[in-house]
Amino acid sequence: MKNNYVFVRHGQTYWNKNGIMHGQYDIPLSDEGRKQAKRISDELKNENFDICFSSPLERARKTAIKILEHHRAVPIYYDSRLKELSKGLLEGRHFNSEKLLRDENPRFLEKYSIESKQQFYQRVENFIQEIENKYDNKKILIVAHSGTIKMCKFVFEKPKQPLHIAYYKIHISNCKAYKFEKKGINMKIGFFPMVADILHAGHIVALEEAKKKCDYLIVGLHCAPNYKNPQQSIYQRYMQLRAVKWVDEIIPYENIEKDIDMFKSLDYDIYFLGADHMQNNWELKDTIENLNKQIIYINRNHNYSSTRIKKESNLYATK
Image 1 (cartoon, rainbow, N blue to C red):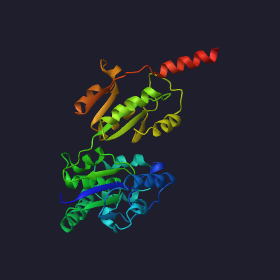
Image 2: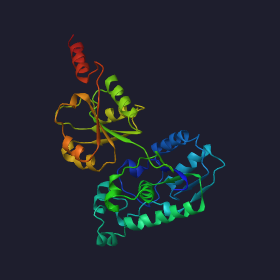
Image 3: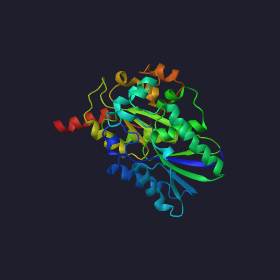
Image 4: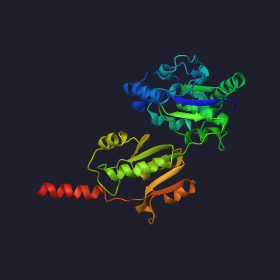
């Protein structure tokens, strides 16, 4: 690698928000997407970019323009090779339809006019090779799409698994900066599953401790645990967690039995749990260990407790 790169996925679109699958459909940013673009623009305002390349699709283009408000002298070039994977006739369907793409069946791809992962990789590789041949020791901003950034990563670090399998084991967040530097990619991703029912100071302390041990913290929001009946709605818990500055992303899941594939396929390095689970044979322990994930138990050096809060609330209500 001759240059240093910062890759940013575009902000949220209305299709992202509503779980609709898109590839090269030119869908604009949602209100939240524009806010995300503003936040990443402020986050990157002190970076010294030499040049910017962007997908020509509006969601990427508008995100790039917002970032470059702090970098007026940086030229921007739009390149069609940075477009998202073309999903052909599946674009516009519910996101669940994407599972049909995972097997990479050539007949299926041809029938629905879908770009293969190998074709996608080749056009992105062609772009990266051209940039590497043309520039040396530059800091380059590239604003594109989830799939495009995955393929860029694969150009620099060849996947150990077949391309179409490795592709679905990486998660790229909206408006998150991913740095690919000459020294290599060294970003640790943490995953912390929790119910977060009546979020309290103890949860915050645990999340802060977890974030100290990783660069990017994902909270798995357990929506429907079978061992308790949450008093707060999913929306309330989601909004509270979203306001915690240590949390980079929230992924809701219904329960472990139904969503075990998420735990297996999600790209993370560290699995966090409270220290009270250390002596227990907790759900998925064998699975997480077999995936070679690092498991870190967060100590509970406080007396905060959701159960205690609920009990005190009930006692107060009966007086």
